[in-house]
Image (cartoon, rainbow, N blue to C red; front, side, top):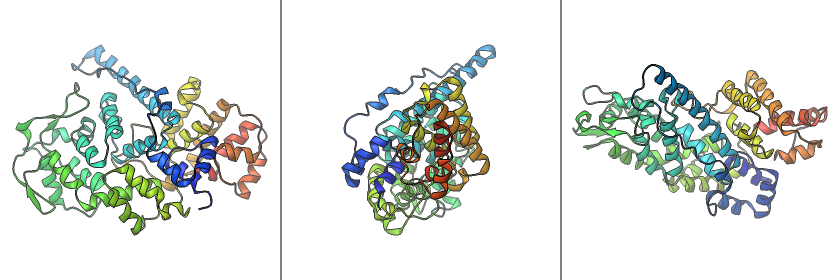
Length: 421
């Protein structure tokens, strides 16, 4: 626990700058947790990356021919726009814990634009992550969210033609976890979710058509009632298993993806549910989290945004060729914002440390170093710049061999000490 403030800032956000780390050390651990969880005032720095106004979806009106081709091109341009915006927002924001939590929810309610296609719908879902005060409210708003409905085939779920995809993932991946429901519960929950469609004109909320809804009674987890979509998520959100599942998922992404959450930590976090910020506060103050026994491999987005922050760079201010190479690198590594690979979200741990990933990351590090144009510095100054507590002898020796500042910086960015928090 000798330098747990640095670990706290790395986990709660995307990577502290040297000045942020110095200030946090002076303030102390508890004060830093309080500032992270309950920052004072609006995030002025984040306003430098305002939320994009995409306007109406170009597919409104079902365009045909050349107009359809133009609409496809417009959606492609808007998709690139929101990806770049979010990377920029993560980088400039002062309220780092807020931005990191939004990133967590994106991986939890994993929905991809590769199938959804509409940037407007993806952004509407993204805003629900930001605007929901607690998990119960979030679950309510997402179960009728057009992006999630389309992603999990909810628009085809009617009383005459049931589709249980959304119901299954609602229980397995979003709210309860495996082992806390039966196949019959999934079928009954699927009936509760019938009747919801979507229209391109309304990216923020689905459209309920009563004629497609199954109004009969359903028995779910031993309770019989006339469940509908909102009644179902309210019911699931009140289950003790939901609080414990969300606690375990937060532990998985913030503390350790390899070691299970300790029972005492789980109990304390579950008692803070449904406020996920309160759950995070409980986690960050927990002795197990602070022990330093648990390690996490940075996800590619965490790695890139952290580097941008520490070098005081912005993805949208780089030369276009450099930005393209970094975005291409994220795609090669398998982590593009708004495009998780499956409903299970992105992998974790050593899955990001393959030999092919190492080569891609080195290329990206060289692009970053080239754009940063660092001055000559010592290995110790590099550690301070990147908020690395210490180098191993092996890494230190390798860094000492660097022939130029750019080479030194690139090596530091791909070092094990920087990749593993």
